Length: 250
Ligand code: ADP
Image (tube, rainbow, N blue to C red; front, top):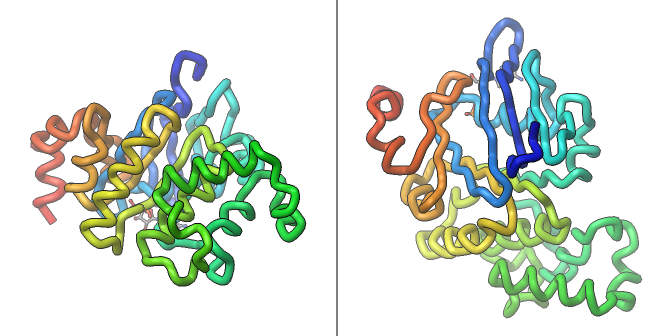
C-alpha cells in the first residue's frame, strides 16, 4: 500500500541476468518529499535498481509500486515517465544549439513538437513557470545563452530544470556532481536542499562530501551485491562496521 506518505515502494525485487543476481531481494521505500541518497560500490546494483523503477528492466521477481498503487512492473517506460518519474543520467543531455530558455520550453510537457510557435504563444502561467525554474536552478542570468556555451555544472542544472518543467513526482539522479568543480558541487547541494520537500528525490552519488551535504536530516541507503546493506542517517551508515568493510575492503 503506497497511500500513506510513501511515493515509491520496492519489495523483494530481484533481477537475474543469465543466472547472475544483479538485484537480490531488494526492499526499499521512499517517502513523499524525501531526498534519499543511494551509495554503494561499483556493481552494487544501483543502475539496475533505477532501470527497474523506470521500466527499462523488468524485475525477475518482486514488486514495485509508485504513488497511488501504480504497479511499475506492468507499465512501459513511457507510461512510467508520464506518471511522473523523471530520470537524469550522469552526462548532461541538453540541446546545445538552443538557448537555456528554449531548452526549458522544449521540455514543457506536451509541447515538445510545437516549440517554434510556442514562444509567441507562451501564456502568463507558462512564462511564470519557466521563470520559477530558471530561478530555482540558478540560470536566470544565462537564459539567453546557447546551452553549448554553459559550463558542465550549468548544463547539469539546466537538465535538472528541464526535468522540473515536467513537474515530476519523483526524480532519479545518477551521480549529479560527477565532473563538477567544488563550487558547482556546493551550489548543487544547495539546489537539492531547496528541492527537498517539494519533490521526492533519489540521488545516487559517490562523492561523500556531497552526500553529507544533502543527507542532513534524511536517510542514506547503502547497496551492496544487489541488496540493502545498511540504511540510516549519514552518521549511522558511516559508522556501520559492514559499510566500512565494504568501502575499505577493496
Ligand atoms: P552499479 O550501478 O551499482 O555500479 P549495476 O546495476 O550497473 O551496478 O550492476 C550490478 C551488477 O549487474 C554488475 O555486476 C553488473 O555487471 C551486472 N549487470 C548489469 N547489467 C547487466 C546486464 N544487462 N547483463 C548482465 N549483467 C549485468
